[in-house]
Length: 204
Image 1 (cartoon, one colour):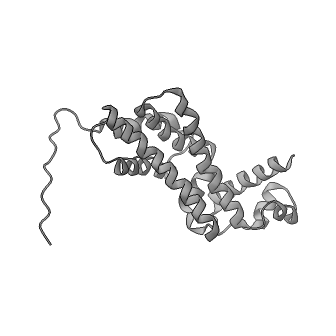
Image 2 (image 1 turned 120 degrees about the horizontal axis):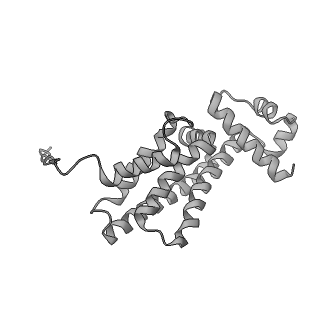
Image 3 (image 1 turned 60 degrees about the vertical axis):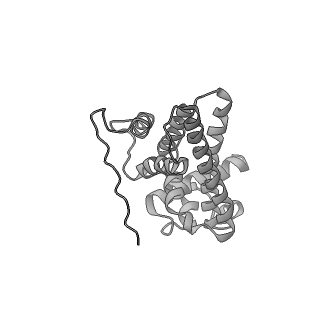
């Protein structure tokens, strides 16, 4: 096994352990035992558990950004790109479940020097989604909406699904993405729905 392959194995196994037992309950001894290496060997690749946590965060957000960027040259429309963004997040629940839990639950445990770079990537990905929603509004496929709020709604719908989604259920992750996309883009209402008129907020 090459050095790169061993490092990847450590990250993947550690993510699985963090998913099963929690970050704080998993020790470097646990990781070394699960990977099948001596503890000094583990420290050769990662000086601390925090460094492994950082690697998991970086790998996850890099995957999302790289998948999106690989599609930008394909000429997909904004609504198609939005569907693929949602599918990316949900599909990673099957292929990188441990990464997903770590990314959404353990960012506060990142060492201070790692939080800034990871936050920059998180913010970059959020802007990517905001921009494609804004492009959809500009092209007329989406109605006028606040791109920032719409992006937060998209993430809110997809990001929390790892808490209840289980592979092998009634819907595959991509099928779930289609359902979520349909709710987001078309809503639940029919043409018989009458929207309530917002009430004015009384002055303070």
